[in-house]
Image (spheres, rainbow, N blue to C red):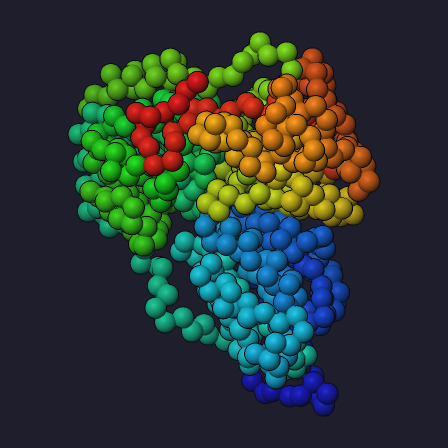
Length: 590
């Protein structure tokens, strides 16, 4: 490569660093970027205008919203999502979205502008050492100090983000590097010593051992996680269940990897999972763990989790094997080839009919339930009604974080992978709306619905402006209880109902101190319908059970983004519940 100063460059073939970066995005198949401009990123944004026919630039109203929207693209398509911010506060506003992508293994490239190299470390205006800030929450990170490295860095970033166990990669590029010129070498080689993911394929003898263990098992269970969806192994998983007849439960990240309406599905397990899934895992003699990490919200007290079972654990990330739970059959492998090999040789266990019948009995005896006689609208009923209306439609559901998230996981039956967007590992409030926004960009013809709580919704409510201005018809079903419902649930269960800043209305209201005497807050704040209409979106509120279905259908049929404000009670609880660090023996059902 020949490096030339930008002010004197005249040779043909020369490109600005900013143009090289945007051209690299195009060459890596990126067709949309969520980017918020600032002083140090202006050259990049100018370059984006020169590539407007090849890549769509969407302006979020907050950098965090842009990061979650990029995840919406990645989670629904499997491709690398891309977001961009300027230096300093723009970069730090991406931190939560980057950490979120890391914990949920989402392929994402986050680009941040940096102050010019000459003033790095001098506390220059809008300077933060973003690479250092993000060192522990990225799969990899770069500070571009030489324009000659840029094409290689871009190639490596997309490779790292999308291969092996996916994750976020940060590229920090100083403003003066963006303005330098060079003749780029698009055929440069990557330089990644030690990054070797190609060998992560199960050995035939390992698969034979697993098949033999399945053949001998009397009470086997499949425990499926987000790794199934990441690897594109949902079809192989369904074939495995069909061939063996083994019941299956999934994590929150695994929802959609197996049809929720299948008789062998025991739905979600863990803290707010079904009673029957938790009972089945407690009593199984073989736990086939696929693309999971034995998260504390699933296992509770680790020593008691699947205590009597031999554990098979297949995961592409060797650091997950034996990290939380020792495996009797540890296999480091991409799940898709591993399950393909297993499906080719596996035989049905000799006799598990009694076990399958027992799981079905638990499912019948301990169903998910709510008070169907309640005169108003319960959160569970609203989600079940939405599921009934949307079950034959091409629908993508996103959620914020809290009670509504768990109820959506319980009462919406997902049949296909990549139709459920949830901040699962980090549990980030404010995730739902921008994630749905990204999904809508990726799938313009899909029905993208964000099931929200009012606490989570207000954290990134400004993205309604993006939805309106970019003509993204995202729908928000807002389950508005005026409280931080999940924290209220813990206050009521374990803290004698003492309200510690969990009421979202004015502090002089009686609910702020737990002195409200009705199931609903006496006054509702703020007026979400007015806010939605202020952003140019449609909106309505509903409180009568008899009017709910018509209100949902009106929301769905509205030509544009829409907020349906559903009035729900604030002391409804997500059940069942296994208290943190406890076991299935401590499960709370009522």
